Image 1 (tube, rainbow, N blue to C red):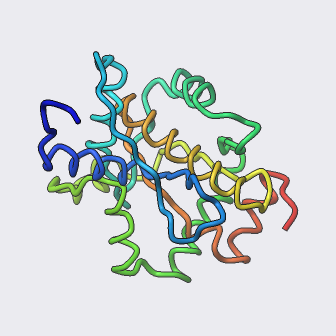
Image 2: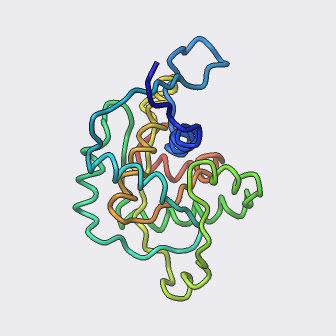
Amino acid sequence: MYKTMIPVEVLQDCVRLACHAPSYNNPYPTSQTCLALIDFALTTYVTEAQRRRVEAIRNRHTGRTPFGAPANWSKFERTMRAATDGRLAYVDVIGDGDRSDIEEAIALAGRLQPVQPTRNGRNGWWTTPSDRDCSNNKTSVGRDQAALVVISAVDDTRRALLCCGESLSQVLIEATMAGLATAITTDVVQIAMTRRPLSDVLHFAE
């Protein structure tokens, strides 16, 4: 047993940050009741990169208001692709030529499947609650200029779906570390009518 006991609050904070990450890798895939296995061990040092990653998990926010164009996008895209494994999940950036079709599909999905309170609650699982007033963003930014990134599983197996979630988590953290705002849009892939244009752009079979 360690001579110095770790305060319970520190352990609670560690678990809370881990939950915000948000991907878990179940150590026992055959067990539906095991969410995660967490080990705690002493370390002699913490790197600056590790500190920045923790702060990114702590600071990531989400929102539905229009975004401005991301600064230094080409540099971040290289970072994003280096941080994800293309063999485990597909990471595609929607080009300008296809953007209008995808934006129309996203808008249609929003009308067909309005935002529910439970969905906002799910967003809170892996983001930090924000007290910032974002109501002025629509006035200052106008039309959404955000880069559109699609992260897809390589197949329909449980392992592939897990890797897709882990890649999403990695992209979100890398974006926050780079000072970029992020928002997750899943409605467009939940409805066949709006999923089809996305499949056509990415050349996926429906």
